[in-house]
Image 1 (cartoon, rainbow, N blue to C red):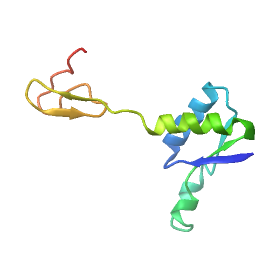
Image 2 (tube, rainbow, N blue to C red):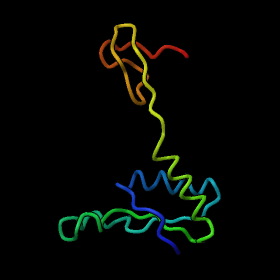
Image 3 (cartoon, one colour):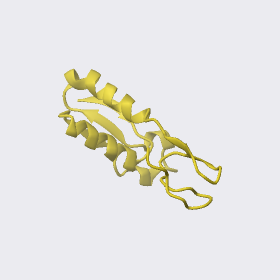
Image 4 (spheres, rainbow, N blue to C red):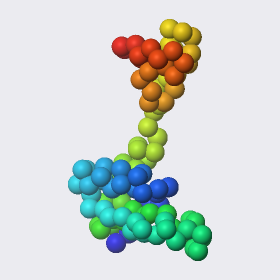
Length: 101
């Protein structure tokens, strides 16, 4: 087994594991429940980790994780003049829906 990455939280770790598995990469999560020990142990030692079962899949797995970490965020200008960034499909200021592209 080979440690691939440390995730910032369980939700992100689960997303990464699911993506790797969908790509045919055999991966598992370690330290799943260790977050409860934060405060008794150093916080960086309590974060979930992604582990690979087969070292020969490391390069492909690293590429997939890099792609997930660098997802582009969209930005659009609402008719009310407000700039809306991120994954929002509705203007936070006037509630208009994002225009069709």
